[in-house]
Length: 453
Image (tube, rainbow, N blue to C red; front, side):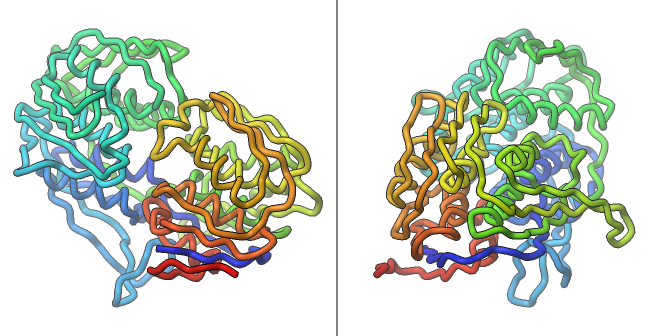
């Protein structure tokens, strides 16, 4: 699919989709709860649907509730949108082995977190995914699971297809985490190991630390006992615990909010008002709005009353040129594509550093953003751990999204202030986390290749 975006000023009031990180964690916890959970206002995206399919196959019963409602979820042919899931969970010991492989699609979060959850059962369960997923290594996670008594078989370099088989026996294992999802997987599964099975994890490397704080917020809310070193270099989790049902609305996604928030600044001066976010949420990517402030944008939070509960609005605008800065993205590598796009419009040279792990996401995002911004005339320099971007004129023309949702959305935001239309090939990848984002930007979408003149 191709999307053509013509330059224009981007303004409006936008409700942000629910958080993918929260949605998938809540689905997995609900699936491992012997009870019924009501997950309200979740994200309806390809990644979330992949997680639903996986936990259904493992034995959870899921009913979908749809309603005619406002909000960012995509509507079906009757105009109704996903309003919630009712999940009847299963005891971890009753996890079933489905016929054939479990396909996680493009969802790395589902793959890593569900791998550990499936290891709580006693039957062999095999996971696979799309081409990108089959190139993403779970090696450190698989080595740690093996050290906890779990049988593991995988393709070369710890890639899918991957088979795991419990029982979870406990023990002590080292787990270097170039991606935080490895550690989140262990933290969510280990409390449900049999009573007496104690899991100890040494963490010699940890990137994306805020995502671990997010995962621990769920353990704390559930009253799960654990011990953690202050620097997260060690965890001790006793087994024998259980989860309570997960109920209530899913918070808005700061990772997704970064794209319309930055689009307000690339496509003119804004303003864009974002709805559905909570500045107290533990999501690490909320730091994006501090970064925008450092570059000279105006970022204003305002508390309001919306329906029956307090809510916030966040307005982003600018009245002067953006200024280049240096940003350490070690804890926030998912922000690299959109920050690279935004830096193309800043005065001076922006450095995005300490994010080598951005190379092991759906794509090598450092190399891909350098390549695609280069096609639009933006001067960049790759570093092993990041990217240097020289602000200046952004040209129109064809670019490729490389099947990576964050790359597609970053290029779409960059297109708003370009000298001419930008055609993004492979634009359908945006639906992985933000269905409707391209339409929000006024993109013209076609199924066949277009030639720009």
